[in-house]
Length: 318
Length: 241
Image 1: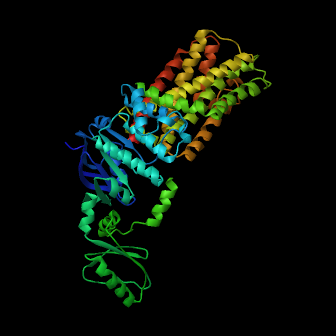
Image 2: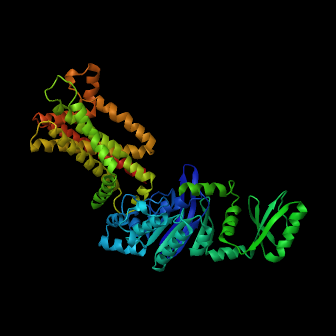
Image 3: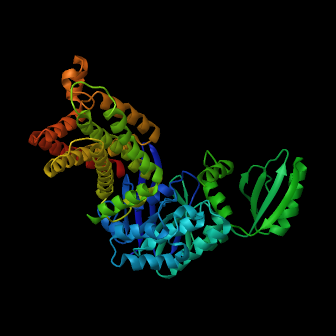
């Protein structure tokens, strides 16, 4: 029995299809759900945590149906939304103890101490949350989620708005939980983090899974090297054998090539012949970003992933 | 059932730690008692303080409930509600916890008003009379906090809710029987005051003070309480899944 099993899971908001016949199996792993804004990530998590009814299809969490057996489902899971909701007028210990009581677990006090220790918050447990940093608040939310030892943990954007060190720490904790046999379902925008820490990722575009697998497999499917060219001037995409376009973001154009070293001078020459100015050419191994652009681009999305808009949104949220 | 208590305790801790909010909630009604109750030159009664205290008690319940109604809406806006809804404890206990907290807070304020009123010259009543006053206030508090919480959750944004709040509280107070008896009201005000729900609770408390047991009013309030709770649960369920 898989921890999470969805079959044709679908959700409409009016006529807009947010999640479109999603079928997934997740078990005993860190599963990362990636996708542009509005691709249906949060909607999927809301349905799996019984906070939203699916329009069609079914899903099981630990063998319980999310619509018919909501309470049993909620007994098996913990959910940390992206809003970072902790009571700032209460201490760390009070915040966790409150959840321990609501879960109705025996030995609430001992378990609270235990999870605070795991999240390295024991020293600050009796301070008010208003004195906590963003990373500590996130860890406190993890402590709240872990206090009833769930089988499945849902994390919606767990590292959004945190600094690099805090993000690393959160992921190390998530990795530790996975070793203890927990199934962790994460949504994230950060490709590098998904690449580094997720066992498997699914890329969601317009409510559909467009790529699914281990990050390393997805990257090797793209094959070989990625070339990024920074070009201004009259640009048309040169048709060269063995060189394929991945995507274009502002003046940066990405290609894949079987042999990157040989492709570089060919590309430079092709651009020069068009009268374009090549500012930089770089060669690297493919990253999950490339997989993402490739998968999402393939969908012919009318409104492309707006990087600038996304950064504004990030800033607003922190 | 214990989850209701835990939700209530959370709000209570948060309220007591916001000291200014506590002080302001206590000063407002005390100011009414002292500056209106003691100073207004009225001729229709010997002890205006005795007359106005029930009105202040009911107004306090109303203001406290209207203000408390925003709590669940803020929990929703700030993301707490989704965390609570994903817990295995019965979801309705979130709503009941709020109603319990708001009602208890109103009772605490009412107690302080009764103490202040007695200190500055209101008549002392029997224990049974105080008991009945509290019963009326608690029933009224549950009705109001249930309605306020549900309306706020339904409206969903705090600007609109604040507008609803100001629109309701003061007009409701001034058109009730809180400040003067029906006999001295102009006829148009009397017509409004008799159908004003605040007057209903105020009159019930006044009959307790005059030594009558208002079985009818208490019965109606209890019935209303049940109806309001059923409606609130239905709306809450609809709004949360």
